[in-house]
Length: 132
Image 1 (tube, rainbow, N blue to C red):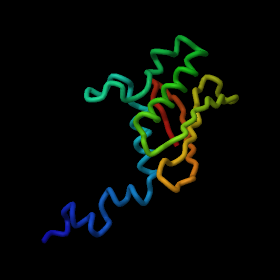
Image 2: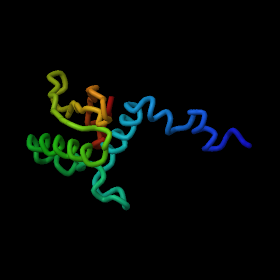
Image 3: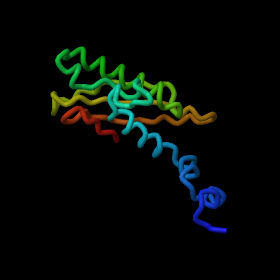
């Protein structure tokens, strides 16, 4: 029997599923990067997946901040079930006033988990969102 197959990796705990159980924050972070850099309507199978296109709301500044903040929060609540109690707060940067930055705070939804996760985002050129 081959030791390279999916079942053998899962039995040994070396498969991708196993690594998600060990480090859920890495998997969540990777998914949030995809989610926040997908614009609503880009996914054919799920047109509501993603967030507003910043370029579509930038002309409505400063209300664009609240629209983006709300869009990020709703997308995470809808498409990242491993997180609960999601808050998104605009964090103005005095040194770079034209930069649009948000802080995302959430709890792991896993039973018994009381950890708080914090992510920072920055909307870059072309609406690309950096997450760390």
